[in-house]
Length: 135
Image (cartoon, rainbow, N blue to C red; front, side, top):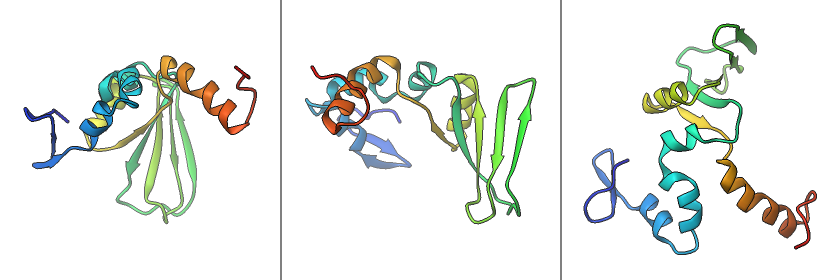
């Protein structure tokens, strides 16, 4: 979403200051920088994930759960029962994931390694989960 001249962003022709608020808040600035100022193409390109999940809305109901693996593209498609109407597709390249994102589908992946290195040990330590260190 391109930023407007006044620092606010436009989404579907309406002003949206939510992303601007995140990137300008002093406590969040470093995280936004590690997330390439919230640029989806860059986040997908630099994810720590081996594969990126893309959630596709499925207009047709599916009666059962199935998984299909395509050898040539190393992608997996999982169709869930008809109640969810969403298909999950796993892709191994950022360009494909970004093209699907631009077509209106949702993507999910891990943060870039630099952000994980910044946050994960502190989260584990502060929540008492895992072995996040004691410093």
